[in-house]
Length: 118
Image 1 (cartoon, rainbow, N blue to C red):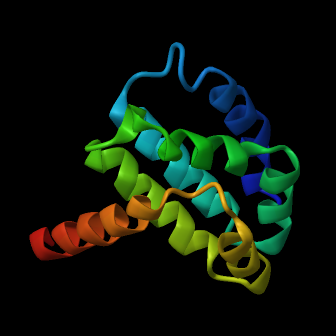
Image 2: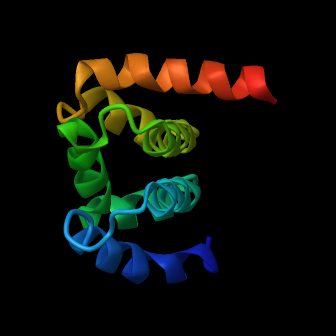
């Protein structure tokens, strides 16, 4: 985890500019996947949680800005799967009330499509 912790300040900076300057779906997908990779360890997860990076990313997915943007939803699905690799992450996912209900349906759809294409 030590080497992945270097990405936390960068992720924090990127999420501050999420809505304004960061418009590329590919970059947004990458950011979510990188956050998920960092969050695979409980230490990385807690660092992302305490810096409110996870809250920022989930808040974005809860808005209509990403509706129909399947690359962003794929990144979100990957992030959530990575977070669910440990008990702390599972608890946070269950307790997080900031995830829109139809996001889960979109995530399953995106994962189904990507597995079918593989």
